[in-house]
Picture (tube, rainbow, N blue to C red):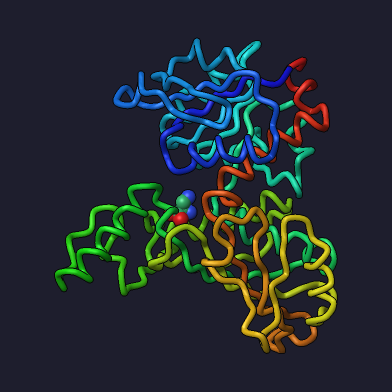
Length: 344
Ligand code: 2RA
């Protein structure tokens, strides 16, 4: 047995990680279909499930799957996601922002709100920045009630996909070898030796869209529509793990110890918090890990006995994208929600 799985955008950074996560999580795949642009179609790809010939996307072929992961842009997802799910079509897990805020589409982190998928065939994966921070925010919210949340991010090049990672590496090599910084294409400015407080487009309220995604998506996933959330998003010259400094104000009193206890027990979180031993979350140590690392946990007195600061790092391509998507599929199969959705 096993499921027929399609990945659209299979040659991109997230698409490739989805293949890896399916294998490492032991997701039973009876057939793997890899869809990419005409340029890659016909190429044979070695995968842990055997050799797969990449196909150009067609609705017909993708609809003949049980699960389809969309790891492509929002325009594609807008055009095809619903067409894919119609009738006997597959469950679609979309990594783009196209459907995230649609009230009829669940926005899911499986450890938090898998049940929101019930009866739904189109499911949205959150933005990486939200997905990583919320692994720590959710258990703290459950225990202490988060009233206000201020996030400052340090985001890796992988947020802009393989082209972003390549640009950072190429610019760095060129700069180190020639002393000249080549022209940037993917990021708004050269990234090596720099930080850029500009990710995605500026909105009327002077926040960027990336920053507003943290506000909108955190509220939707935690189901607290009026939670006060403010974010400043910054691109830094790291490869593939996002870091975020988070300050919260809670309903109930919170201490460093009580927060640590909650985080230690939380699913998807590894507490890395031994300042004396210089142990705290870092992009280099969080890279390649399924859990996010959380540390620098400390009560602050800005909010009396109701304030906490912490630092979280998570692999942007895994927890922030591919792993979350695969865990949704896994959770649906295990809970039988998938069968309900297909029957609905
Ligand atoms: C970024 N969050 O880091 C975006 C990618 N979804 O650019």
